Length: 204
Image (cartoon, rainbow, N blue to C red; front, side):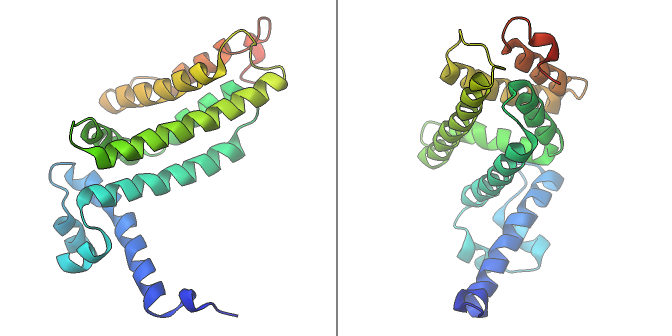
């Protein structure tokens, strides 16, 4: 039986909202951060500015929704590609980022916005995001330690933060200079987490 929410005005509104989210990244990639506005996104979709404002009150709100959906896809994909082996997970994080340079650029632009003193809206989003991501990585490291592939003399919560920081930092370097080998850097980090005597096979 078809639910009421699957059709009619509600479904049409949900589809339009998703179209806006999907188009926002394309416009950002084409025009850059400074020139991408709600009006330019509305023009690219062939809708009026008020229609777009009905779904998103600001450019910041729209871009954070783009990142929120990307995070959800990334977590799902990384979970399916990874194992308890932290080297595998670290390399998978790098590969996922490398496949989405536009998303990485948007992410860095929004991080810069979140660091502005009065921008509590974006700051709250990124605090929650990092808390969740560190929690995900910590859970993987706990599983890896139980499987014997993560050394037992390091604090896992701290290492989780280091893995996230390495992924962010290497992705920024790669955006600036495509000769930076992000995958190699993350793989080395993964091997450093292996117990003594297992580092050579940590990425296998």
